[in-house]
Image 1: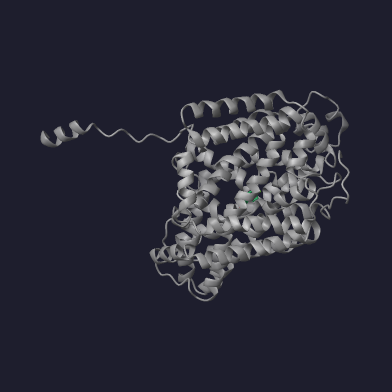
Image 2 (image 1 turned 30 degrees about the vertical axis):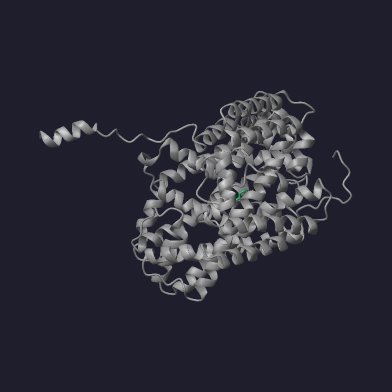
Length: 549
Ligand code: PFF
């Protein structure tokens, strides 16, 4: 490696430790809170199939990219991009120039806020080149954790509310009112958020093996156990089959370009891609381990847990006559009502929110680790200082999210400044943080990571890295592998064959960046695939039809 580090880098104790920690990062609120409700809103089974396709075609190849970058460089995302970037990159300069010129022209149109932001970003691209992609990851870790820990704090609060018997709603309307009161009560919201952040900081401060790996090995089996208990409960309720049917029977008429892009965006978030979390975790992996099979296991675990979460939720929701399309409130409003109607409801509610908390915790530690690793590697801070200082700052930003989930009334000054600079802003500070990270930083990160591996670092170098510990990847004919003939040398000698590596290279160079770019342009509203509602008849003709039937 290019720079001598004073202490040897810590590594996972083995593949299992790595897979559980990385799966812990991937499996989070995205799987148990978001996946079921977007599936409910987008038509059930058919959406699940589209999601699986996105995971296989885009998610897995990009996951392999990130882990390969991390393992090759043994550095945090900023250091990793710095090490692999060429001294000058025409592509980076071209992008920088385009951003700079766009910013300057916005200023001409008096769009001050966006103009200034784009000019600053353009200059940063000139100064840092591809390393900026790593910085984006660190910033994303910061912003995502600030709102993620607030939602995680609610789950902690809901465990307490469940065991003290206060989630006793007979109607969803009551649950809705309670939830509204709960999240806008600053003492509760801030208290739970801080408690959650303290758990996170304590684990990350323990280090890679003694903190992250040890806790992942405890928490992930616990998560599985809780989930299985909930599934058994849900499936044995009378009337649960309607939920299973909704969830698993595809209705392709519900699939639109819109839902495909939602599935793609969610695949990224769910696999923790696009912000260097997997680069960071990959940097603690030693070269003997099989990167390919580990990536595969992480993706499969994440997907299986998301699917299982749906099986724990929909059968129960249908069994008590509720609809699946309640949106984000499904988990905090519909489910507590469902649990209250069940025998031993307090227990099931507590189990469910504990499950959510465990899932959130293993994801949150990976977000904090990205930020921490940067300060340890690049600024040479000791781990405990990096964790406590950065964890503390994220907690403060999270406090702003926690007190502004509903509206801007508590941050009026900031609101006025943002409106002055950018015109309109999102509904709340919480939404702004979510919007910046999920809609901008992650998709752009994913796009640039594939572009970087496919065209700058080069597929050849990446394949050389992945091949360590996994000969199947580049040396074995894909057809021979599928046919079970991989040990027959005559099937592997021909260089003009399709190997896993060549297939992966094509995906990384062309398919992933294109798909991610389309999804990004759609989320920021530059591409609109929404089916247009049929135009209403002109007012005059309606009136005349009424007057002259
Ligand atoms: N994958 C997590 C989830 O599904 O909840 C969220 C997440 C964690 C995103 C870590 C990004 C990340 F780096």
